[in-house]
Image 1: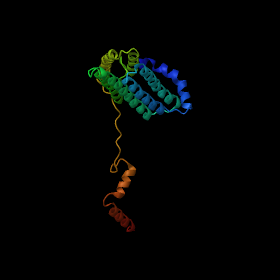
Image 2: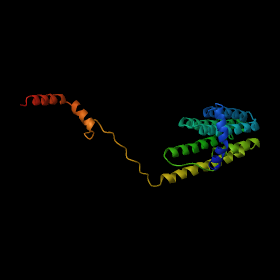
Image 3: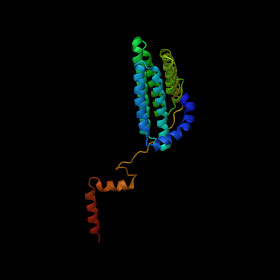
Image 4: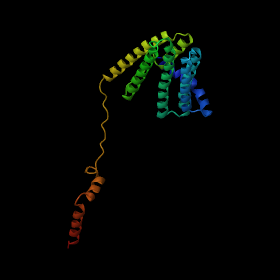
Length: 239
C-alpha cells in the first residue's frame, strides 16, 4: 500500500542523492550488499534485546534499500541482474530480522517464537505470489501488509517494546494480503485467454520451399553424384 502511493514521490526526492552517490563511485550492488550487512547487525541487536538500537538498524537498511534503486535508475545501471540481487537480498534481510525476533522471544517460551516465523512464511508467500503472477503476465501488487508496512510496524513495535502484539497484527494482515493477491490473480487468470502469436517454424534442409536449401540438398542427396555424371555424359554425346 505504501509502496504504491509513495514510491514515485520518494524516487523523485532521492534522485539527487542517487546521482551524488554514483559520482562518488558507489554502485547499486555495493548498497544492496551493505543493506544485507545492516540487516544482519539489526537481527543480532534484536536477539540480544537491544530493541531500540535495532530501530536504527531497520531505518538504515530501509534507506539503503531505497538508495540502491535510485542509484541504479539515475546512473543507467539498472539491469535484470541487479534487480534479481536486490529482490533476493530483501528476502534474506526479512529472514534475518524476523529470525532475530524469534531468537529474542525464545527467552519467553517456545510458543511465542513461532509468531515471527509465521510472519516470515507469510511474507515469503506474498512475495512468491507477486513473482509468479508477473512471470505469467499478471499483476499482483497491493495489500495491507507489504514489505514497507511490515518494516514500519516492526520498527514502531521495537521502539515501544510491543513486539508480540505487533507480530500478531503482522500475521493477520499479511494473511489478508496473501488472500487478496491470490484472488486478484485468480480473477485475471479466469478472464478470456490472450491469443499468442504463432511460432515461426524453421525450415528443415529437406523442405523444398527454401530455394537455397533445396539446391544444397539436391547436390547432397543419395545418388546425386551419379545422376549428375549421367547428365554430363549425355550433354557431351549430343551432336
